[in-house]
Image 1 (tube, one colour):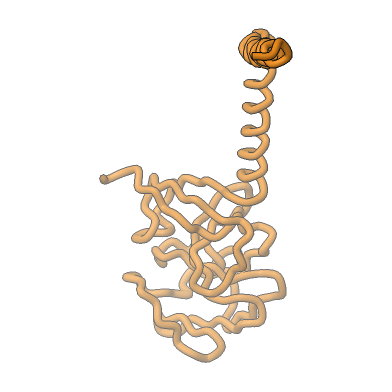
Image 2: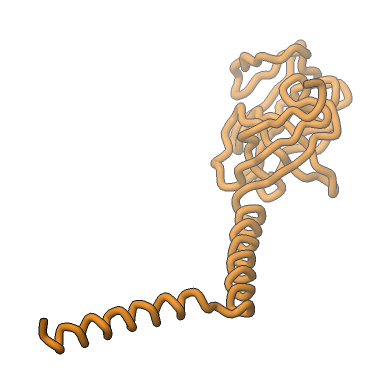
Amino acid sequence: MDTRDTENKNTKSNNTETSKESKKKKSTASIAAEFFIKVGITALVVAILLIFIVGIYVNHSNSGYPMIKDGDLCITYKLASLSAGDEIVYMKDGKVYFGRIAAVEGDRVDILDGKLMVNGYGVYENTVYPTTAEGSKISYPYEVPKDTVFVLNDYRDDINDSRSFGAIPIAETKGKIVMILRRRGI
C-alpha cells in the first residue's frame, strides 16, 4: 500500500470527523434563534390567514337557526364570491350577524303572503319559518343596490336582517360560511 493512499484516507477521515463535530457543536444561542425564527414565520402565516383569508366567529343568537345554532363556531372564507343562497357573516352597527343571501345587486325583492319573491319568481327555500314583511323598515318591492346583498335570517321571526337594515354592503360582509363546528348539544 502506498503512503499517499494512507495519507488520503487519514485526510478524508479527519475531514469527516471535523464536519461531524461542527454539525454537533451548535451553540444554544443559534438553536434559540432558529426556534424563534420558525415561530415568527408561523405566527406571520397564521396572522395573514386570519386577516385576509379565513374568519372565525361564534354565533350568539338564533338568527341562523336551525342551520346555525347558538354557540356554534363558524369558519368563513373571505375571498369567496357571494351568490344567492350562501350563508354569510356580516357586521352591522359593530355587531356580528349571520344570515343567508336572498338576492344580489340588481334583483327586485318582494314579500307577499309569507313568501319571498325575487325578480317576480317565488323562491323555494328549505326554511321552517314563513317570511313576513311585518316590522320591516323598508318598502317592497325593493331593488337591491349596486355592491350590496339582501340578507334574510333562517329564523324569519327575527327581523334583524335586510328587512330592518336594508341591503348589506359587500364591504360589511365577513365571508361565506364554509364550516360549522357544533359546540353545544353534542
